[in-house]
Length: 83
Image (cartoon, rainbow, N blue to C red; front, side, top):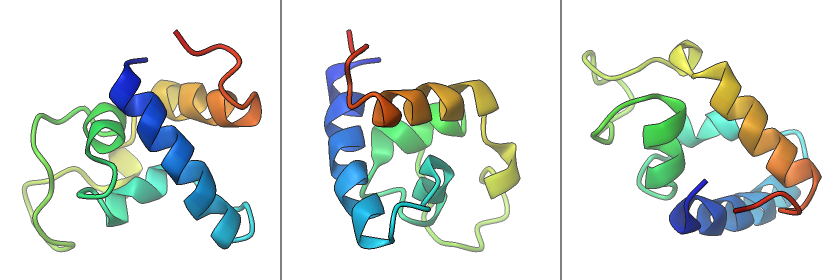
Protein backbone atom coordinates (compact mmCIF):
# COMPACT_ATOMS: atom_id res chain seq x y z
CA UNK A 1 0.00 0.00 0.00
CA UNK A 2 1.45 3.37 -0.93
CA UNK A 3 1.35 6.63 1.00
CA UNK A 4 -1.44 8.11 -1.16
CA UNK A 5 -3.64 5.08 -0.52
CA UNK A 6 -3.06 5.34 3.22
CA UNK A 7 -3.97 9.03 3.22
CA UNK A 8 -7.14 8.24 1.28
CA UNK A 9 -7.99 5.42 3.67
CA UNK A 10 -7.69 7.82 6.60
CA UNK A 11 -10.08 10.23 4.85
CA UNK A 12 -12.37 7.34 3.94
CA UNK A 13 -12.53 6.31 7.61
CA UNK A 14 -13.88 9.77 8.46
CA UNK A 15 -16.42 9.52 5.62
CA UNK A 16 -17.47 6.08 6.83
CA UNK A 17 -18.08 7.42 10.34
CA UNK A 18 -20.52 9.96 8.90
CA UNK A 19 -22.44 7.08 7.30
CA UNK A 20 -22.62 5.13 10.55
CA UNK A 21 -19.79 2.75 9.76
CA UNK A 22 -21.53 0.64 7.10
CA UNK A 23 -19.94 2.20 4.03
CA UNK A 24 -17.89 -0.29 2.00
CA UNK A 25 -14.62 0.84 0.47
CA UNK A 26 -16.18 -0.16 -2.87
CA UNK A 27 -18.32 2.97 -2.54
CA UNK A 28 -15.37 4.98 -3.84
CA UNK A 29 -16.96 3.94 -7.15
CA UNK A 30 -19.48 6.76 -6.55
CA UNK A 31 -16.85 9.42 -5.80
CA UNK A 32 -13.71 8.49 -7.75
CA UNK A 33 -12.35 12.04 -7.75
CA UNK A 34 -12.29 12.07 -3.93
CA UNK A 35 -10.39 8.78 -3.67
CA UNK A 36 -8.49 8.38 -6.96
CA UNK A 37 -5.79 5.97 -5.74
CA UNK A 38 -8.28 3.70 -4.03
CA UNK A 39 -10.57 3.79 -7.06
CA UNK A 40 -7.79 2.89 -9.48
CA UNK A 41 -6.56 0.07 -7.28
CA UNK A 42 -9.94 -1.42 -6.36
CA UNK A 43 -11.25 -1.31 -9.90
CA UNK A 44 -7.90 -2.04 -11.62
CA UNK A 45 -8.08 0.93 -13.96
CA UNK A 46 -5.61 3.60 -14.98
CA UNK A 47 -8.24 6.29 -15.34
CA UNK A 48 -11.08 7.73 -13.33
CA UNK A 49 -14.70 7.45 -14.29
CA UNK A 50 -16.02 10.83 -15.44
CA UNK A 51 -19.71 10.25 -14.73
CA UNK A 52 -21.92 7.71 -13.01
CA UNK A 53 -23.28 6.21 -16.24
CA UNK A 54 -20.05 6.00 -18.24
CA UNK A 55 -20.38 2.78 -20.26
CA UNK A 56 -16.69 1.94 -20.64
CA UNK A 57 -15.72 2.21 -16.99
CA UNK A 58 -15.71 -0.53 -14.34
CA UNK A 59 -18.96 -1.43 -12.59
CA UNK A 60 -19.31 -1.54 -8.81
CA UNK A 61 -19.37 -5.33 -9.06
CA UNK A 62 -16.00 -5.33 -10.89
CA UNK A 63 -14.13 -4.55 -7.68
CA UNK A 64 -11.04 -6.63 -6.94
CA UNK A 65 -12.21 -8.33 -3.75
CA UNK A 66 -8.64 -9.00 -2.58
CA UNK A 67 -7.95 -5.25 -2.60
CA UNK A 68 -11.29 -4.57 -0.89
CA UNK A 69 -10.33 -7.02 1.84
CA UNK A 70 -6.87 -5.47 2.22
CA UNK A 71 -8.38 -1.99 2.62
CA UNK A 72 -11.08 -3.23 5.01
CA UNK A 73 -8.45 -4.99 7.11
CA UNK A 74 -6.37 -1.82 7.22
CA UNK A 75 -9.40 0.16 8.36
CA UNK A 76 -10.30 -2.43 11.01
CA UNK A 77 -6.76 -2.42 12.34
CA UNK A 78 -6.43 1.37 12.06
CA UNK A 79 -3.39 1.09 9.89
CA UNK A 80 -1.35 -1.08 12.19
CA UNK A 81 -0.11 -3.05 9.18
CA UNK A 82 0.65 -0.13 6.88
CA UNK A 83 3.91 -0.15 5.01
